[in-house]
Length: 195
Image 1: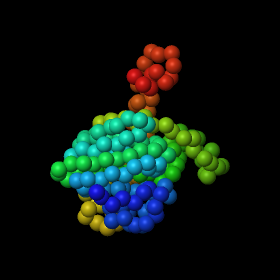
Image 2 (image 1 turned 180 degrees about the vertical axis):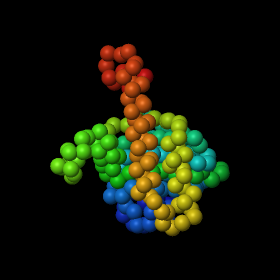
Image 3 (image 1 turned 30 degrees about the vertical axis):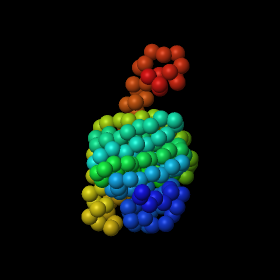
Image 4 (image 1 turned 135 degrees about the vertical axis):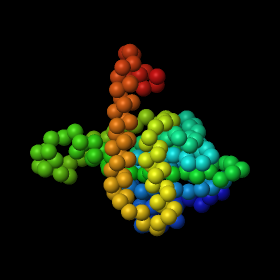
């Protein structure tokens, strides 16, 4: 079984990038390969889970979701989850974890008048609820493009810009899903989300 430091730990792990990054406080990439790995009851920050080789199972909200290459899973900040890898061949994952409020602030700044941002630059951004389900799309490639640099350099360059671009893509994905949900003819919002 792989060794795993819980997202609450600030110790440096060899599979976390950039060097010295800490869960919740910083946006970071977790890029690892293992045949067996279990981590349970993690309440991490907003994150995007991808698999580059093999398959991994994430459990959240009572549902098990198997993610394979070309797919991704979004888990909300504070959403308790577990991951399991159990394979005869190595499985490689690449996951992005956002600093607390990072994506929400980008959404707020993109939709607020400039005057408001200048008057109150430290205002709190409203929470966004993402649907924790299997998705496919270009967001997978954006996240995994960081993996190659993580393996080749101890401190990949331009990480901040990469995280902004990934957050922007995640927000576009969020808007697409919200628009699809709104088009479903159902009385209750919860029914539209389930469909």
